Length: 125
Image 1: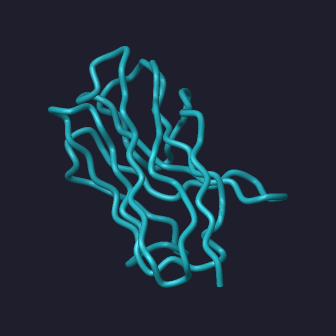
Image 2: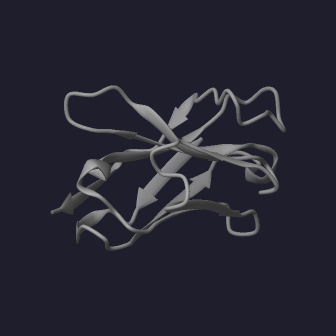
């Protein structure tokens, strides 16, 4: 499984960014997907997850109401729309996918087995 993330960059506080992750190597539409982030000196944390058909999502409390995760199963992509960004959102963001089995897995807890290369988001105050 290959995950290619893109869309990071530098933005002022209050601004928006849209991250995208293109997946390949297996049948995308039967797997949940997620975004994690890791700030300097901190542990990696789950930001948002989405189930196989997009009907269920979950968010970290710190981003709820500001971030939206979505997916396009026809294009094998998952997107994280980030609005009202804060300096504390500064981190490297990673796209993640669960193990090959089982399919149609739940999103909580989210078991990540595959990782993208990460894309840096920097929010200036």
